[in-house]
Length: 144
Image 1 (cartoon, rainbow, N blue to C red):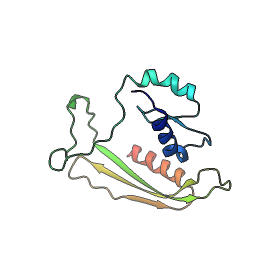
Image 2 (tube, helix red, strand yellow):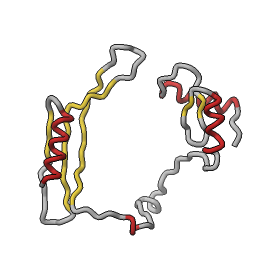
Image 3 (cartoon, one colour):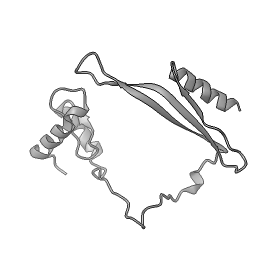
Image 4 (tube, helix red, strand yellow):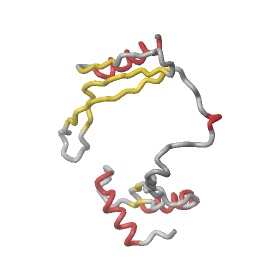
């Protein structure tokens, strides 16, 4: 695949707001990675072009609706899994050019067991010092 001027310019405009770089973005058409300098992209392409270009495919209803894989020997069975969901709010940056910051305001941990007779209540926390409380909860789950 050869990078044409029109397609690279279109990709540059498409991803311009995604980076902190304020100049033209040079985008790899294989992996969609952005580069600030054209010579960096030129050096990157020989390694990346050995792979096919990135594409998005969607499952076909009724046919591909189930996720599966063939290498089941690589599975690592565990008796418990902890699912965590964080809540956050966006704190605007003082500098208009900077990206706003997500500040965690709470979380919920749910421990799930592969055994039917083990049912755990979710742990919910909302308040100050969220990350410290999160790590305390994870270490507590580890000790159980």
